Length: 473
Image (cartoon, rainbow, N blue to C red; front, side, top):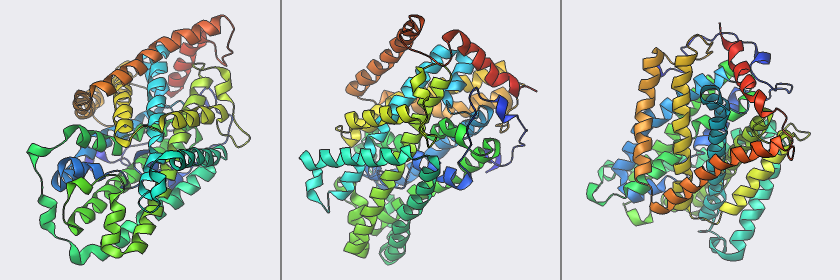
């Protein structure tokens, strides 16, 4: 991959004990589980990509999943590899922004990314039921759907409570199981593939808002794994390697099923909505393949749920360890998991899961964009402010290279925000304002001793310095 090779950069040894203010626990996650945790943070398989065909036709959908990774996924993954190994702790991108811009903006980053993650996680029970409702129509609406959403959330939350070792093992099993039916469908569809179907498009009839939001949602969140960096074995080497292999897995996991689905059946764009891959499976292989794919979709959404909740809850734990949140957010269960963080994240999922697929995707994309802008600024500023800091994985090119790699995704963010609906903009801006007000309110409660923080606000800057200074040559 040339300059995009995650494994070509020299690693510099750094004392792990000095890299984080709280590292008194055992790191549990190795390379293979981390690959599949990243896979589920970002993708989980092609379930949910159908709307790109519905919005723009086969040609633009296929081009999107080939070109978009180079505009967004590769830069985001490379930045995550550099910053995640520079700051191998659970607050992830929060400490990146705090170190560059101060704890106030670090808190804003944590608020926006946590909220976008919870909104994103509310999508997976919805997708789960959308795939299952074709076989069990009663799951489409009403009390059965509401009960199913609550039940799924409880079961998967309990899985997160049991620890990352189990979550990582489950992610590997679910990842293999979720992709297998597409391999079988691809083999069975070979006699029916017609390449001419891949070239169908109509630029005058493209829903650009749906197209861009679906692409963006399916190929972002590479940075989410940084909030688990404190749980990773030897993160200086493990994280970049896992990101590299996960990037390949994600792109192939989207492109090949789309190639099969659009080439094997006649095009009807109206049918290409959530769950349509299960209908294609029945056309290609029969009812048995449809049920297999529906079960795989269900398992995939379970994997995405547990991976996202792990990231969200460990982020809250990391923020508590840095004194940005009350001390009780730093409480771990007997399995080493962030107990309060899991409960807060699960509550948010239940409250937001009544929204539709399109509304959830648009809302979380809007907030995610604001968080990514802060990350890009922090990435460039740290290159300028701390040019000699030890970076176990470093993107080549110096400051100019850092700026250059941020330009394509920054332009894409502007396009995504420009296509946002007024409703999504209003909701997103209200959420941003809440974060701007919440941090001073928490500081006031701390000063009045109404809430206990593990680190006082006056010492937050010291912790930011401690995160960086041990890394300086």
